[in-house]
Image (cartoon, rainbow, N blue to C red; front, side, top):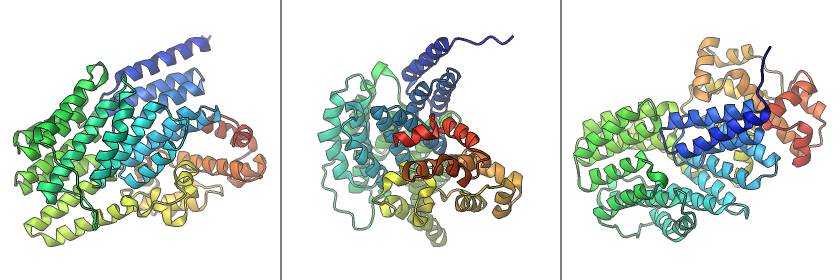
Length: 481
């Protein structure tokens, strides 16, 4: 006989796991994400959708880059849909900020700003989320080389909001963001070859503080983190400042040590440490060592699908090749940087970001399809995805997807899972349901017709899969929209 626990007991257990999750941050990214998934699994066992969404919410608003941004994106979208279905607007807005942070992590700073500004227009946003949103916008400006608006927003908007939330890490995060922005200001003023701006950008007018004042920002940030938890990104920031401003050869070994320690448990942290190590080596006049370090950073960041690191690393590799007289390698590397920078700096920014990022993913206009077909994916995976999206309203056989990819089924399935963190079948089903949700929201087509349109075997199968994805029936979804 199978003995099942009462649902109340299961819910209490799930709540305890989520409570432990809140107390665990910050910790290595892989460990933290596994804790989130454990909390999600506990909520699923308790059959409690709201607890599931509460667990998944922790994937966002951390300023800790994800080890798997595509998976985090889908999970946060799922949590947002649950909160909106249950009328919890404040929680849904928190999810949207988490999604904006993922855009920032992937290097899409301009789009992250646009999405975050949309969220800031909502009255239901909490003071803590409002503070986080302003730090995120400032960091995006800083990454783009727009240092004056970044520093102004941090001091005049984010800092006052952070002081309203004394038990949160916001104040520490403001000082951390200020420290990073002053490092970029130092590069702009003293070593412009290390600075990544863009052609025709306005002159930066901010004053550069002393190196000691910049180091102090990272020390102050560490002292302000609740419960004295240690956040290694502060170590990386201070070591980068010391390595560039002192300059300190010891910073190279310290950054290398951070990278080695975290390679398995926190690949994004390891990639960031390697990138900063390469910058210090360039500052110290060690181009060949820097070239090797940047190559290691590329290898570390490749599985993360993060153009933020890839773009910055490729620009530095191109500049080193140019300094060494390797003009062919410099040009080829610069092409990679140039096209990614144009794409990510905002030429894809559009007036309908809300539908692009928060509606069905495949309803994107044809010229915006590169949001889904990310440049680091193998070409045969891109062919498979293109075929799926072009035929999403038909019953799609995986053998046909394989045939259009041009490789064997095993090769495609392995690469597809690595690129999209999903099986081919799950990818197809997810996109069919997302498209179907748009039809339910914006058309009067009956639920039976929607099920037939997207190739579901029956309305019952469609309803079951829809409920599994969105946490409510298709009919309730339509009423709520």
